Structure formats: structure tokens, C-alpha cells
Amino acid sequence: MKPLYLAPMEDVTDPAFRALCKRYGADRVYTEFVNADALVRDIASTTRKLTINDAERPVAIQIYGREPESMADAARIVEQAKPDFIDINFGCPVKKVAGKGAGAGLLRDVPKMLDITKAVVNAVKTPVTCKTRLGWDENSLYLEDGTPFIVDLAERLQDCGIEELAIHGRTRSQMYRGEADWTLIGEVKNNPRIHIPIIGNGDVCTPERARECFERYGVDAIMVGRATFGAPWLFAEMKGLPAPRTMVEKVAVLKEHVLASIAWCGNDERKGIVHSRRHFAASPVFKGLTDFKQTRIALLRAESVEEVFRIMDEIVEKWG
Image (cartoon, rainbow, N blue to C red; front, side, top):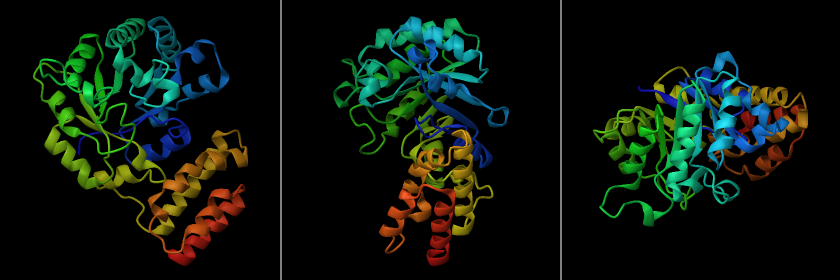
């Protein structure tokens, strides 16, 4: 199978989770996205996101911002951390990012998006990549001459000097609702004027869907995001590699993630547990269990390793 990448996700793709995904077959991992302005101001919580380990390579550090100058300055700072790639976030749809003219907000200002891309490419020697969406909303999916917006945008970003482009198959207005449209991703990949790798992203949750997207749309790699919550072994499943199969084995991985999160959070037990809760909430390990509601509530309220592990052991004993 062609490469599978772990998508950049805020409060998710920290070193603890990236390491697990790498172990189970992720061919590339991405950091949480880094605010360019905060990085330039040397905000500690932001600079901490530049922490990468050789074991997780190849790794990309993703940055976002709304001005070419600050993005170029941030890229220079990021380069000192020696990532394998510097990725520009043109796809984040959340209001606090897109609403301020960064992330997917730049889909409404393509000239500035291109200026930012050129500034970052010219500022560093590290390969620069981008991640974006199909457009701002359904009314902006096509240009007046009928050309898909994303096909035109991909060519223009390529001309700026990026080395890869990842496309999430939704518009900004969709957020994460509805189904990802891979047809337009395929049109970008099949455009004879595109010569950089195209990475597809959106709703790839199973090995079968991953194979289908590779075969039908011809993308060079697939980026997997929310489907990895509480399931870092998904990459191994997609590749047909050895992966945890029983509930006992999968819960053991979740326990390992809890301990790694605590270590990443400065050995703050409660903080590390809270940080990893979204994985409990979304993990397929616990989906579909009968009469599980109260146990799930207890698991998400637990604040000590002893309590979390005790509840997990009880789940395995009762439902495993």
C-alpha cells in the first residue's frame, strides 16, 4: 500500500500519540498546528510544540498564520527544530483560526495565501508542503469557466514551490459534517499539469476505504485523522501488518498511551489523563458495548492512573 500519514490535529498529535502511530505503521506524522505569531513571540506553550524525536521521522511541523512576514519568520524558527517538512495550514476550519483570516480563512484570499506560501518557501531550505480544503463553501467550488477551484489553486500553490499538497475533501463551511468529496481530489491528482505528490484526506476510516481511495483516485498518499482517535493501530490494520486484535491487546495500548501522555505533560498525572480522554471517548474499543453508558462516564471522570486502569480492567473482564 502507498504511504499513510497521521494528519495534524490540535491537542491530539503530540509526541506521545505520534510515537504510537509511528510504531503501528504511519509513514509520516505531523505535529499539532503551531501559531506563527505566538512562535515569533516565543510563547512557551507554542514553542513546546516544536519538540520532535528522531524515532518519529519523517515528521512535519505545521504552522498557521495570516501574514507573509510572520509566517516566514516562524518558518525560520521551525527550521531550527530540524523537521523533515514544514507544512502550511490552509485548511483549519475552526472560527478562532479561519475567522481571523488564517487556516481555511485564506481560501477567501487566494492572493495572500500565495504570498504566504512564497514567503515560507523562500525563507527556508526545508521542503515546504501545504494542507487545504476544496474551497470556502459550495458556492466557491468552481470558477466561472467551470474549472474546479481546487484544481486551479493546486497549480498556483505548486508554482509557489511547494513539494506536496494535502487536500481535505470538504469545504470550510462543511467543517467536518457530511461526506468528504474525493472526486475533486482525484481531479487534482489527474491534472497533467500537476507534478507534485497529492495527498488525500477525509473519511478514510477502514482498510477497505484506504484501498478504494488509492485505486479510484490515484493519490500518492492518504492522510488519516479523526479515525485514529483511540486507535493508533489503524495504520497497521490498513497495511495488513500485525496489530492488536483483542480487547485485551487494544486496552493495553490505550494504557500505554495514558502513561506516555502523563510523561509528556511533565509527569502531571491528572493533566496527562485529561489530555488523553478524547481517545477514550472516541476509541472503537468501547463502541457498541451494551449498557456501557455509566462505565463510560466513570472512565471519563477518572483522574488517577489507578482509577483509569481499574475501570479499563473491569471493561475487559465484563465485555472482553
